[in-house]
Length: 350
Ligand code: NCD
Image 1 (cartoon, helix red, strand yellow):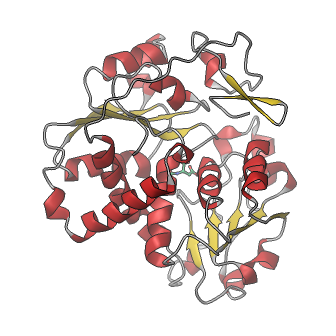
Image 2 (cartoon, rainbow, N blue to C red; image 1 turned 45 degrees about the vertical axis):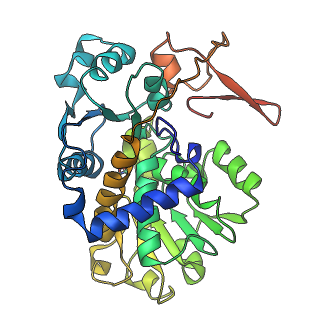
């Protein structure tokens, strides 16, 4: 059974993921069967950060299920601009809506929101941390385009440090047998330590490499990502990373015939337009699968469930990550867990 809130896909079981991807396939085949399934229900989309696909696909998903949509896509147009706390916004909106999809620039924000919500919270991206519903879209794409989740050599390329889609995808794919990861980035943009810990614990082999061209021939899946400009401290630091990786015809010529190339989008310059018509490019299909994945997720999350969320006990001291939601909204109970003698913040995982 799905957890009440979807903060991290790893909180749900592989059976839950399979059930959602299966249901997504059913909805794609028979959309009319589901066109009133959420009649009378309301989705709130609270987007504190820009979005095209995620926000519109959540909204379209609810509309196609016969429900309605409220929300904001620019905090400047909401009471957030007047200084309202996350806690107050969530308390109010959870009195209006049946489910909330939320995107926020601070890692851990969706988890923090779940402490104050009367309805399910779906994490639609929390800073550079996680993006579980993009991973659901990726899983549906893999199921349809590759036919399996296991025994794949998966290359992830670009901003592996700040790319939340990368973190959620690695967390998910490391749960399946026989997967191998090739992590392609500059030394400055390697995956964060908590992702390496997950890979170590999973036993999946992985390599951290610099060259995309050298990795191409062995890959079954290539997940390209943009350099996340908005997460850099300065323009100079961003410019030093921009344009390092470009997937073009020359590199595609080195790849397997049955490679699939995914990208959560938006693309900037990391996939040359000249390869758009190569049949191995699946990123536009991926956006469509994402719609069905979100329809299936909304349906599942609105199934009648009664839960009592555990009330976290404040552990007193501060998370050291300056970006963590607990540093912005200081009333949130500070919670840590121990892993290999390290204290890990329960919100941002740093
Ligand atoms: C991604 C995101 O917002 O994390 N896009 C998306 O949700 N499809 C990727 C990105 O912004 O680079």
